[in-house]
Amino acid sequence: MAANDYQSVMARKNEIMKKAVGIDYDRFAQGELGFDYEKMMSEVGYDLQEIIKIQKETAVGNTPFIELKNITKLARKFAPKGKGARIFLKDEAANPSGSFKARRASISVYHAEKEGYPGVVAATSGNYGAAVASQAVMKNLETIIVQEVFDSRGVGQPEILEKGRKCEAYGAEVLQLSVGPELFYTFLRVLEDTGYFNASLYTPYGIAGVETLGYEIDKELKERENKSPDAVIITHAGGGNLTGTARGLIKADAQQTEIIAASVDLSGLHMASDHDFNRKSFTTGHTGFGVPFATRPDRADVPRNAARALRYMDQYVTVKQGEVFYITEALAQIEGIERGPAGNTSLAAAFDLAQKMDQDQIIVVQETEYTGAGKHPMAQLNFAKENGIVVKNGDPDQEEAGKSVIIPEHPSQIKTRPIDLDKLKLSYLNKVIEETKVKEIKEIDLKFLADEINKSKQETEKILKEEFSLSVVGG
Amino acid sequence: MGDIIKAKSWVQIYQVVLPAGKRAPQVPDDTKKVPLELKVKGFLKEDAKMKDNVEIKTVTNRTLKGKLIEVNPSYEHKFGKMIPELLRIGSQIREIIKEEV
Image (cartoon, rainbow over the protein chains, first blue to last red):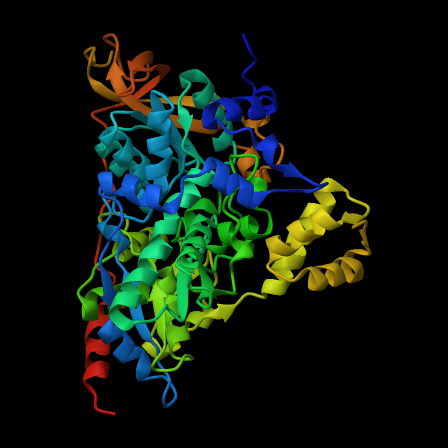
């Protein structure tokens, strides 16, 4: 029998994964440091029309698309003359499991059934677990969800407890773990034990499933307003939401649409720390995932992550926890739409960004998520108070993650703070170069790196030379 | 002597997955000092008492072992008390959008 200690199981990682996702990632290897991303997406994934058909069968997608007239009106009160773009919202909470993650789960589960796997496993503390479980029961497959839930005191984040409940409501077995990245170890052991499909968030199936979201937004806006969105703003964590949506927009031919990422600012908190775990009020959509996944996407549970946010991001902004709670309350109070806070991260950012755009422009907030006990500003702020976090009204700029949540005193205080994308791109390059230890860059690798950081080959070559003293060789 | 919990009861069990000394090398120090713990629910296979080491059958028909910690485990998360810091938002923004420019 194989040994089950941490090191031994991790050493079998590639072998376990190959069986559990059925993808031979080596097939896409290319050059010294890269791989053929588009080849992976097209050979392994399903095409857009097939995906639309698959999703229709399990009631995924075609969610309401709503113009937020009162929030737009409110934003315009603080915008310079002629400014204040119209804000639209894609109400993804209307998916069967209450979030856009149903899109992501649908193709994985469809594929698992087609390939004859008896069940699916997913490692997630988020809405994805419920999405996988919901899609799986429709196909009569078993589901196991591995969740990071509680700290060493046994105290669980209310948001995660609610998501776990929802998984169980759909008949899933939920493995609730304490804090730590070894969740992945437990996940591997479950895959080995069951022979189930790894419904990873980061396979081409998971990402291709989100393409319909971008595609629908463009199609619906063209029908209503005869134009593509000027900007689409996406709550960013692992990168799949952004990557899938952006690819869908490109497939709809919305090439000019600006892709903006937004995360809750949790800088200073360590994501694997037992102590810090319950000092955050957001368990997803935050910089603790958003930054590391953008700069090193292949940290995921598959060898090559299909979510590669830096390829598509035109801007990346952060908002504070208190600002997201404020806008969540505003969405309920003046639009009559009560939704979960984490999904409203991009709405908080859109509220500020709209004020910088022209009145005839349109910014689309591309998701909402369901709300309920635990997953609600009241629950999350009560929990924060119980864990020694100061909750007060004031200037959100003063908010310090892990110490305070500051609810704005006035809506004019809701502001985005830019993240320097060029810095993230440098950090991405630095990690690739460190890991692969390349001494020179071949032409094919230059093309890969340029695509990865969404810059021209010339610009990328210049950065490689100036920052890393690496030159490009060969033709 | 605790009460006997009947076989087939819906219960929650507890295991230590990795003890404090055997955690992944990359975890921060505070996390290294504590074990990686697991809780999972299922149907009790045989009559037992609280804190016994037992076997359960999960909803996916797997057999798992662990310490019996709860019977009919509850969902305790809730909305909780009203948050005064949120209370003012509704009336504040309704007033602002009514104001004429």
